[in-house]
Image 1: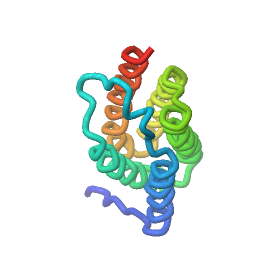
Image 2 (image 1 turned 45 degrees about the horizontal axis):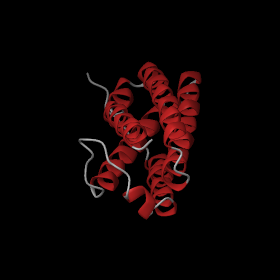
Image 3 (image 1 turned 180 degrees about the horizontal axis):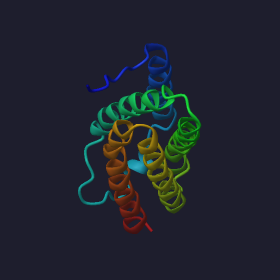
Image 4 (image 1 turned 45 degrees about the vertical axis):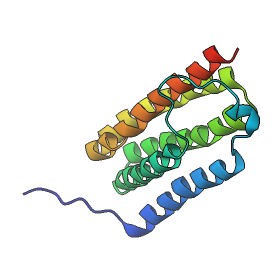
Length: 158
């Protein structure tokens, strides 16, 4: 008999508010100014409207994943949760480096750190809940695309 997947409502709501709310707050605080908009964008740069849509989906998947992980209530789930919350903080800092301060190279290096943390997170999630890990694959793919874009801005705007 298959196990059913149970998402506990309160932890899910907390994590959804944390991820979506944090992302919304960061988005409002780091609105790109005219200087950023005057930079040369790399090829394949999507329209600005796509970013909040994609991030909303990714943050929702993150909330589902971390809720699945913490529901296991084990040492492995605690370790995985620590990496999750650390990567979320690193994620929230990146837009300030890139948009607010215009540190294009530093933000690229920061993004590589984030990617490494997400890979570690996925591995730790997998040990607790394979589904939670699989739900983070789109996030990793998006971060790799973001790294391409970030590096493109570095190269095209010396």
